[in-house]
Length: 92
Length: 376
Ligand SMILES: Cc1cc2nc3c(=O)[nH]c(=O)nc-3n(C[C@H](O)[C@H](O)[C@H](O)COP(=O)(O)OP(=O)(O)OC[C@H]3O[C@@H](n4cnc5c(N)ncnc54)[C@H](O)[C@@H]3O)c2cc1C
Figure 1: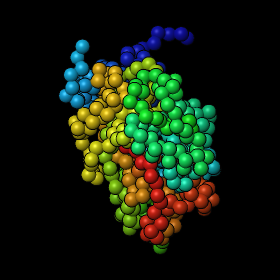
Figure 2: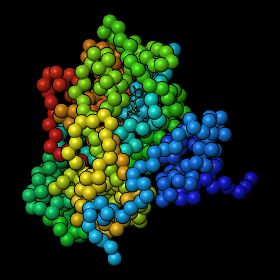
Figure 3: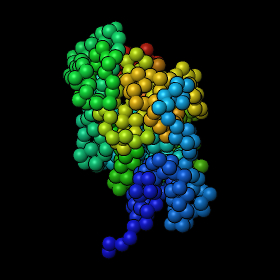
Figure 4: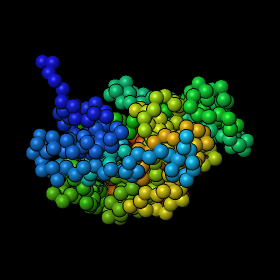
């Protein structure tokens, strides 16, 4: 049946069906599913999609959400142009 | 609880060992991973793969590993490309050094060659060649995606019957000069063979069994930009500083460079790394200052005194094997190390003489190996 797809991660175009398949392949934690499907590795860096992933996994696997700790948000906390780290001026 | 083989560690080394052991017919294999698959050094690495080293051990093992990377790409669909390495020199003396390395590579059948700006514009259109004195190109080298490779080996070996347990191994069981299994918080597991593939953490684990591994945790940093279209195919290296940059399969540019570091088990982020890596790469990539950096992290190289891995049986404890100490090259060696370990465990000997030269005994016997080309 060609049904509607539930999109979970907009930046990388990942659906709930993709998550179900990853679970079947043996991935059952946020860090692994993030890297298997690239959820949260696009421009939003997981700010929108990772909480949804946690809620979905929590229901699906019957694990409380606090046990599925969200992955580390790596520095820089917001993406930043490279020149600010050299103190140089590359504006314009 | 009993297994034929227990593997400690679910990085590239552990999953590759499990895959080759299962393929070669080991009856029951359990892999222990204390965190998640790839969570050690493996998921922090750049994915670069080359045979252009200067020691016979590295070259022979890496030529075989590159054959196996090709097989894994064909058979399991692992994301791997033979897109080359390009070592960029801006000074004559660095170019001379590259030429001497190339002579060594060629004598071992690794077809590196010196190239100029015309070649650069073909394989690396967004690298600025105005400062170029010359470059060394290694067409046998390439890259694989660490996430994809490690997770595919995990899923496939799991389907082949390997039992993965997400628990920490807290000790090794040994008695009368033989290994008996491993200890975990949920109980002891008996095994005929135990393979320690626990990255830098192999050292404290083996210490408990009275085995001294000369291994140091050396922090190494990396940063990644936003995604771009095709910029350069080969992994590029700035010979002057040892800095490297690679465009990932998704189009991000991943960069690293060495900054002076103490040996540390819990490394921390450093702004001076970002400053240096951006400064070095802006000389070759004039568009870099305005590119966005999206992630920065730090991981470990598992470093030995001679920058070569420690592989194979541990003398004095029958049935105990180790595979670590890759000194910055453990991802690329994953497949060949898996194959060698399967041979040692199941047949009682290594596949090659070069692997046998790398047992831990070499440190006690003073047979250290020489390698001239180590990069950041
Ligand atoms: C920034 C950076 C860039 C790099 N670039 C490259 C490159 O381009 N090419 C290349 O070939 N290499 C590169 N490397 C090196 C490479 O990442 C490592 O050599 C390689 O990943 C080592 O893999 P491993 O499986 O042996 O160890 P690890 O990946 O560290 O795996 C060990 C695993 O064992 C687990 N573990 C540890 N102790 C226990 C225990 N007691 N019980 C259960 N589990 C345990 C850990 O959680 C971990 O997952 C790079 C490294 C860094 C940091």
